[in-house]
Amino acid sequence: MEWIDVVFDDAWDPDDPVTPTGSNRVTFGCRVGPVANNPNPACTLVPAASVAPDKPLYGHKLNRDEALQHPWLPAYWHTVDHILEHDTTIRQHLYGAPADEQ
Image (tube, rainbow, N blue to C red; front, side, top):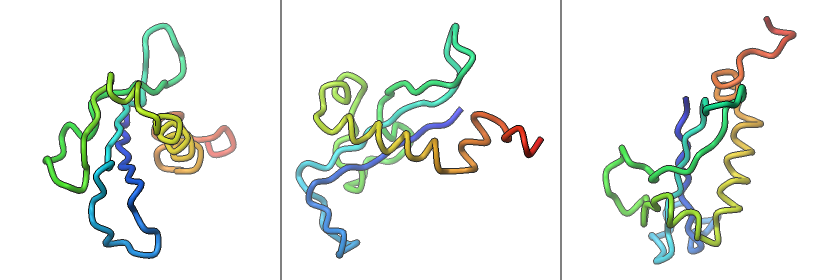
């Protein structure tokens, strides 16, 4: 099982990695793993960064209901999809090694 938290902030300046926290900064979270009646792992929204300390880095940690209503939810799912498709370590952990590597 994996937990994926992603911080979004519309004030971040890609040319300045030390941009101060914007007033709209939020963190989304999901659990990726087994679900009932499904042979494949699935993603489920959960309270964001629940094990992390409350620090400005995270902004507002969204709970499930808040995340479901947030306009940035599609961007979050796009980011999670990208991680699951392109991060070899996470992909192998969740789905096992590709057939040509077994």
